[in-house]
Image 1 (cartoon, rainbow, N blue to C red):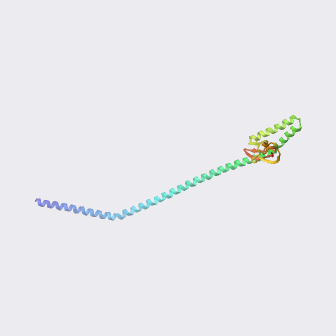
Image 2 (image 1 turned 90 degrees about the horizontal axis):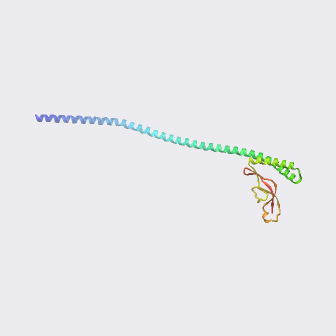
Length: 202
């Protein structure tokens, strides 16, 4: 009886193992059947990922180029703006210089008139009137940047003086110095607009 029961249990165990083996075999076969589909799906995902990575790199390159173009454009604009401002300032300065240059002969006439009145006239009213006109005009022009070039008694300097004559001098310390001024020279905002015409001691 016991032997029969053992045989029966053994038979059931074998049947169970056989069923499990069959099930495992079936699952293995099913996995093998599904494997190509999984591989194909994985391949598609890899291709899609590669495409996205490529698009990302292209987008980065495009953004970098746009940024570079923007920086270059801003630099060009800044250069243009600075150049325009400089050109405008130069134009205004040039117009101002031309206007002031046109007034220099008036200053020359005033200087000559004052010198003549000083030497030959006793009319104090005329002297004062001429000096007043000269001083007012000179004061106004100074506000625009006009300055008289120092000349008489100064060392001759080709940056500011133009020698129109030479004069023999006895004193050694006066040689190479400006002996007299024939025509007053001027600077405008530090730039020479007319050299002082001078006589140089030799």
